Length: 373
Ligand code: IPM
Ligand code: MG
Image (tube, rainbow, N blue to C red; front, side, top):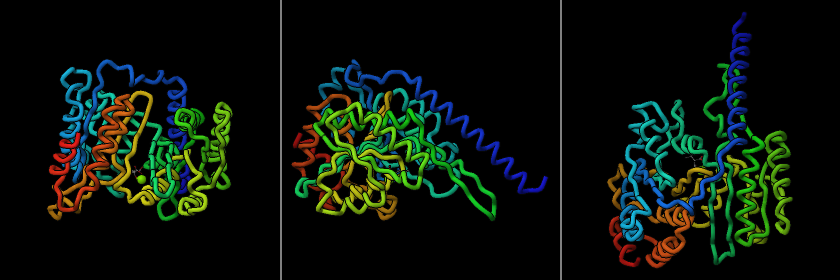
């Protein structure tokens, strides 16, 4: 057999294995255990993962703020703050695992997680820790609120977080010197569950408009089905208007002041959600201002959108890192476990403290927050 024939044969074998694995995943989703009722847990364990670069600094200071905010519950034993160390790029590279198995096991003993930024190596074969965590804990809904009250912007993005281009992003095919192919996966249960999360949110929060954002004119199978299934789920929510938008024009409309205020809830596949939430965060004041929730039926993980800021560490400015966005994420976490009162208190303290001045350390800023609490 010549080499091309060989390559095609290998690719077919590879594709068969991918398809089988994705079908197995689809079946697991269809037979999933009922969602954990976070609100009903007698004890909630909150894992705090430090991460890379400025991660240990901002999570360390967030830990102090949370310990002050939640001191009664911690003393009563109904809430545990559990530090999880070692999800570092050095450790991940040394062990050759996106999330080393001992750390993953520790993570799985928690109910919810607050996570510092982790570095994603470019190229190579090491998978992003974020993508691995979303998959391992099946965190299928990436929820990102963006609000600019003075511009009448109050948006919330429901980004599918486990499928699309991300599911097999490290598992493409290459015919050296000729072509490369990646795969995009959209499943029926995977789409229905994110659609349901978005419509439930809309219903429970008085929202009456959901924009389903795809490129279904081009990605006919995957996005076509995503859009059709969102419509199917929408039929169960009378009174909520649904419109289909294409991602390209939506990126333009987000900066169109004549129309953008009408948007409320966005429902979209993984990659489009990744891109457009950075645009939306920038409209709010920058990616460093936004929090992000990664929600599944058994676990949920909350983080800042910003990265690990290696340059701050290199230039010796790590101590001045800003813990505000991860603390906003912590407020989202508290709401998720029905601690609405401390969540509101934390948000109010962050509002009252105002932006951290450049020359104030993370520690001094945390001191200020603790004083306000
Ligand atoms: C995000 C990030 C991640 C993503 C990276 C770090 C893998 O950009 O959370 O939006 O692409 O999803
Ligand atoms: Mg992103």
